[in-house]
Length: 69
Image 1 (spheres, helix red, strand yellow):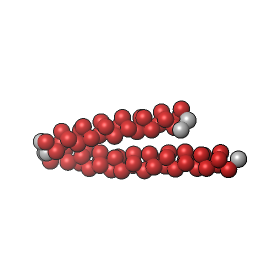
Image 2 (cartoon, rainbow, N blue to C red):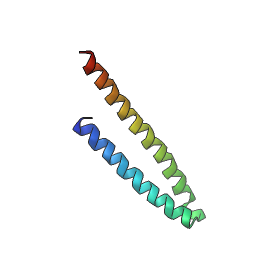
Image 3 (cartoon, one colour):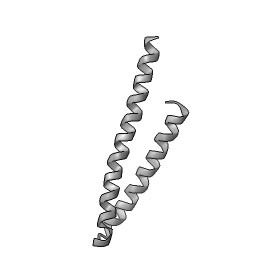
Image 4 (cartoon, rainbow, N blue to C red):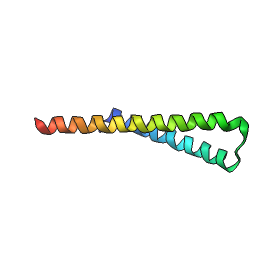
């Protein structure tokens, strides 16, 4: 992965870690007022997973292209 892709992946991992911490706090003490935020965090985690998969696929495509040269 290039530096830019590595930076993007690191930022996504950091965000994912923060979301997991917030969700753990919610699950330890669930309340109705936080339920919507919890659902939004779950949605964002799914988006992050898709973004990480896209970055990995792009890198794999770049490696395949450079190997074909």
